[in-house]
Image (cartoon, rainbow, N blue to C red; front, side, top):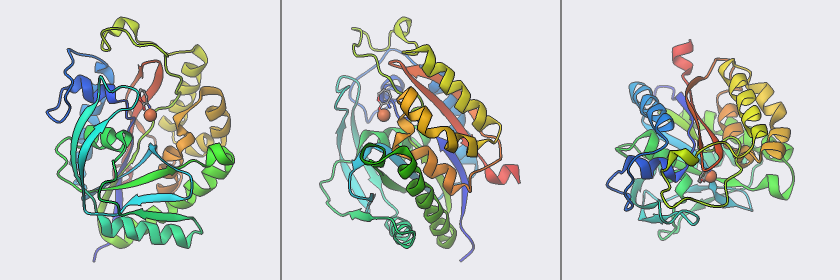
Length: 296
Ligand code: 2X7
Ligand code: FE2
């Protein structure tokens, strides 16, 4: 079998608002408009991802929260209704997704070899989290490729961002080795916002864009700093500054999603492409892409 590769990677935030505003048939609520900059950015990212002809999308989501180890979906198909616990008015999404169980198991085995605690989710009634669903939908709304879904081990809460990052980098190395051995063309999706302080109240019309702005100026400054690092290939600096970013901007990168992806890319020095930046109910969200083959 020819050598597999990570053909692209994306920072792919998952506010359910973006699916809501797109009005796909899978989602029950209907919207008039909203968050266009982010949605147009995703539109361009999707084209670039499709162009690298992926076999599989591998996603790590902050909303599948596990406290003992890193978990992987371990059945070929999951199908149900996903309702956002905070925004049930925006997101009631009927999903039917395929999992590349072989690749999931291969990443799990490599992660165990790195000394990580892991588990496979084999419960057919398991409800897949909305972060996984939103990022995968926005990256590939046709759902015509299988996914590998990885949980977020809540090590930032139990220990520290430093401990989280040590494990997320190991998980990234494990992912890279397993993809290579698989012979497949993989796209990685780091499913997270950057700064992450929400408003605590929502207007009567959720898509009323007159209300949308960053919660706090300090968050904007942090988001711009991280984006600037990534656009200029300074991913090592992002990893080094992560503990402060998480603490000061309540960043959703506390999930390990971004660190895992950067680890799998070998802590890239290639510049990331910025497709969009925008706020969603006060949080900061960047849609960004890495294309290792293009850079080579
Ligand atoms: O999960 C989210 C998020 N990360 C950002 C914004 C709004 C809702 O949900
Ligand atoms: Fe989130």
